Length: 217
Length: 238
Image 1 (cartoon, each protein chain N blue to C red):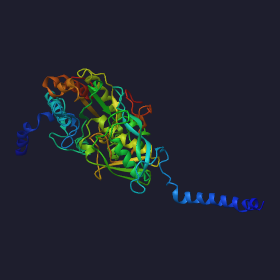
Image 2: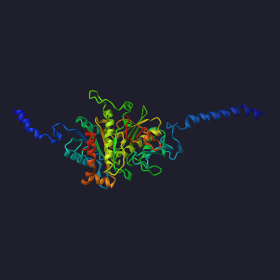
Image 3: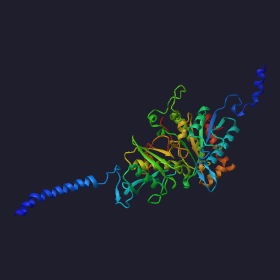
Image 4: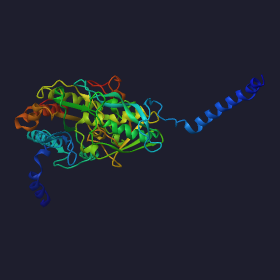
């Protein structure tokens, strides 16, 4: 009887205290740092330890590739594909990683809009929702040329960054740290580039990039 | 008297193409050969042809064809293999007060349905956000200062007219059925005149390659460009 009383008197509060303590320890020391990538979905648990705070698993991200089924009179569109990418806790490092993946073929085998040698050198997230992406010169030297190739390369980058990082609404593209007038002679990149949904397959916007026969008076 | 004699002596030395038979100054058109220098544009490695070279050859062939007719004068933005920023090309055209600008490019796409000539202009959907809400029938007063990036705004309708004429006429020699497209091309933003960009064929297409590189091929499409320009400027094709 006395054992029962002792158990009720000290055992229950003790168990509750233990539960509270373990919760506090988990919250303070064990819980992983919350990601700022609100749309990221962890699909695989940590695969390689690496230096502390670097790679913590794999995430499924949206990457953009030239859509193979564009109609003859439409500009080449982009197609979204999900791809597992190494996960990083720091958003800028994560952006570097997804842009590195963007230079490789899509999971369904679509060749990238970017040359395989075109790799990002730096990515900075600035205030006012701007990401600065600095590429190696190979992006200009090895781009196949032509308006369609240039535009798909540009917007593959812009959409891949803005779709995966909701805190970013525009991208400033640099080549080896310097602003360029264009990437390949057609489209201006001196300003901030925003996502253009009319260039994404299945996102066609009738007010956007469609053929124009006549103009309103 | 002596001055008059010198002037009369020098008169024949003036370029004939600057004056019409009646002595009035002829309209000036600007032909811009795309790319140049380290910017080769599209490349067909197998054929050993780059877009910058194809565009310059096409521009020079057109210049020759236009000058033969003596109905207008021609300014080429570049005459050699030099790198030239787009704003410098537009500045050259704007300073010369060209009546229109045609920027000559080529495409490169291995898909068969991408062959042929394609004409682009800067449509209302691609104007700078700040001006797209305004009417495009804007004022062309030289007294008002126009921001560099909005130079094309007052000419959108004229550019569309020129683009439609060129596309309709180029479809025949290039055996294509393409329609005019609006595209946010940087050069067109800066042009204070009707301006279009023409992709004169696809470097990946063997038939288009022949049209671009052979004398016979060029003779198929130069009349199409000439008649479009004449109709646009003078209201008739000859």
